[in-house]
Amino acid sequence: MSWNTSILRELHASLDRRKRPEDIAHLALRLLDGDGRRAARRTRRALEQAASGSLHTLWHGYTSMLEDFARPVGAQRQLARAAELFPGLPEASGNDPAQVEAAIRVAGERIAKRFGASDFLTDRLDRAGRAGAGLGEMSKRQYNKRFRLLRRMEAKLARILVEQRKREVTLIGKSGLASRLPYEEFAADAPTAAFVAYLTARANLRSEFTVSGQQRAYDEVADTLFGELRRRPDRTNWYAVAHVHPTAEVLGRLDDGQRGRLLGIWYRFLLDVAELLEAAWRRQPLDRTTMIVRRGDDSTTWNQTARAWTKARAHWFALLRAMGAEEIADRCCPGKVLLLVAADVAAWHRETGGGLHPDTGVWAELPLPWQVLRGEAECPRSLVEEVCRQHGVDPVAGGWTEPRPAAGPVPFRPTPELVHGVEVGDPVLAGVLRSAGFFSGRPLRPAAAELDAQMR
Image 1: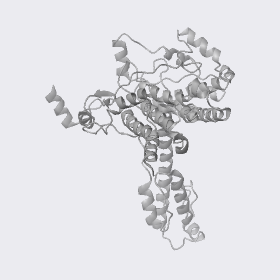
Image 2 (image 1 turned 180 degrees about the vertical axis):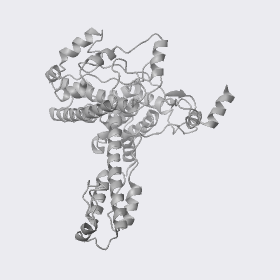
Image 3 (image 1 turned 135 degrees about the vertical axis):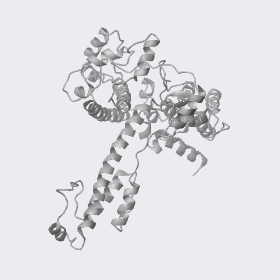
Image 4 (image 1 turned 90 degrees about the vertical axis):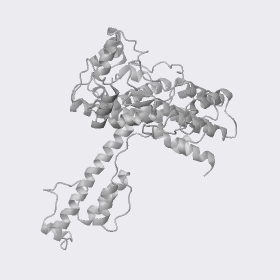
């Protein structure tokens, strides 16, 4: 494996993780230098500024924050037990649902159990059934032991699938389709790979506890990298760029087939996310008039899914415009989905002279998105525009009826060390505070409570 290929592999692996933008800038600088030419001076200065804060260059080389999104716990333990009870079972990865299912099916055939038939009262074989299946020599106890294991493995498989789905929703809500980008597509052009990886890392930043708004992903470093792509448009892989940065300029460089593929992906994802939103709503309907968290609300699941809906909806609108198919949104224009706001953040807004976000009233009056996509409620563009006017909201600037106008790049800002959204200056101190339970909203652990008393 060549030196450049190794860097490209590392950058591609970062697309579904939570690497610091500074560390990606460090890799991008090495990649562009090894691409047979030096990056433009402005691009190099921007990357060097960002890379100066990478873990590779900092004296402590440490961050207290996890550099990955939570992954499902695989079925390795269950597969190991299955290998003991079913000798000769094919090897399988506990993180691959397809392989886990295949192992369950093969093991099930050994005891005449159908996949999915796991009711302990109705699906087990009695003595006559075991004899008829050629299991007459297996005791009831040994049969039950194997049946229970396969039953647990099927439940585990279902949990893995649910958690993987949640993780994908979280990733797409943060950085679009970056995590779905195949390596061959990503690595076809080094400057394209550098831009996609850096913008993805910026988009994957954690939310901060603030009332002044979250950081925008597109900063000055991303802008200089994008300038590199503009200077060599014939070599840039614009289709890969469109996975994370679907501006009119980028989408205008795609052919109809590429735009059509992306449009289909995003529409299917909208349907999938709408299903998840409805499931969350049915578990605990929200107060649409305030969107402030109440006891019993699962704000984490709702907000992750709502972000994915908003991202998918924005990309879908952008593609409709690029393809000249905006009449679709004239007839079917499902609204945005608002995030739940913590009560303390809402109180902070009030303390600083703010109030409910203007979008709240629009969200409260429009039909629910899953009702619109299923055709149970009509929501044309004209209705959205009318409700926006009633609440003093600009439907275009607010992103209600079409993609938001492209904003300029924001200044580069070093990645903060966060403890439950609160910025802490030192990564070692951040780790101590997190392990002690500070800023978590829960009672401090005994040692932490003593430390807190001493600090006071």
